[in-house]
Length: 175
Image 1 (spheres, rainbow, N blue to C red):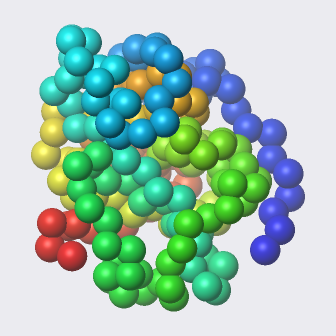
Image 2: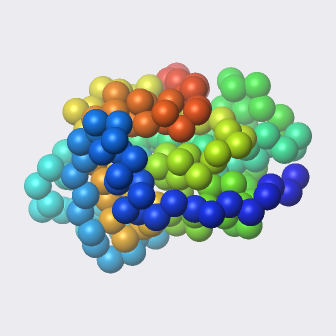
């Protein structure tokens, strides 16, 4: 499936949109992070970030072409085929970097629920880990892996809905 080219929003435009929605955030810049292990090491000693629920994000595609953004706590295992059965997907696999760029306007390593702002055609199904809701704050990359933005889980859900997506909640602990 080929998608028409999108013009992705900038980080500043994302922050403007969050502000317009009345969503308070806290952002910390850092060197680019490419793994959960790097992220854990980078946030040590950063007040307010070390205790928030940190997101791990997967961009997946099923064999019929449906697209999924999976947002879970960084410590969560994601049994992809069990998840596929749970959400009614047909054999999930990772989406190609070109498809990620075409659909969400970001590159691998920067996958984030904030990129839904670029999915104007609302082609991606968002799957959220229910455990995220138990945290006071959740943290995600703001369209690039060189910063981390923390916000309340309810505000993340509000942002996702404002982008035209209705999140599917899954209890990954029980998959």
